[in-house]
Length: 332
Ligand code: NAD
Image (cartoon, rainbow, N blue to C red; front, side, top):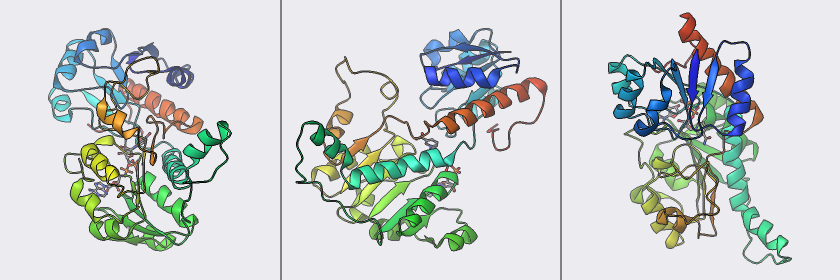
């Protein structure tokens, strides 16, 4: 079976190729993203394998169905970039990788927090310039402070447990709280407003849906403690970037660590170092000394890449062979 894989980089190809060995899958790798404009390249493929910034709107799905594609295999957990209503109407099966090393993503969130709080990004540049001054590098002890974890699914739980390990009080919020897990780890569930008011650090670990879009906006930021650090490794549009910039300009936030950005499509994952950045909002964000941005790399560990590739291949084979998908993979 031919599977057309989009937005693939050398590291994706390496792991997908290895996982498909002897599995009867012939990869057709493309570097560009899948959208209505590029869907014609799926001709002859039974499945497409896509990532977070491929755009599978109705027009794209229509074109894929016309080309004979039956299966959309996401090689990520989130699926906010697929029009599921249209996919259902067109009879397309949609699968994802429901879990792949939640540790990879949670550890990256904590890496951003530690770097921001202790100003490692600034210290690194300074020392390379032989500037050994400590001026402006004062952080705070995480021990004894309060962390707010919004979303206690697979990744949020690992993040909460790591933060507990630092000796932080951890407040959590989730529409489906797990009281046993919280009790076992000394974590308290709280109303999201209480969490916002009491936390020195807030980390987002919930999916992007119409309900959660811009959950961090001017009113929410207003509730937060002055000097609080906000971390987002989930999806960019959970935060209203305009409101975030306004708050950063007043100095209200202590730091912001972002692995995702509302308008990351076409920017993140690409080497634009020789080009003129056209996104003025991102350009403004990059000017703040207390903002640390990575380019959607929280998943990028050897373990996660291997699990992503293996689950994706298992799902591709399952549809072909009429076997069940890996548990939790089938979205429809
Ligand atoms: P999960 O489904 O295991 O957990 C998500 C949790 O969020 C669930 O417990 C759910 O009840 C909760 N939730 C839903 N709506 C909420 C709300 N309004 N308020 C609070 N909680 C809410 O998902 P996961 O595997 O932990 O992944 C979380 C998100 O991380 C994914 O949706 C994805 O967007 C993101 N992610 C990012 C990367 C990266 O590389 N940056 C990698 C993997 C996943």
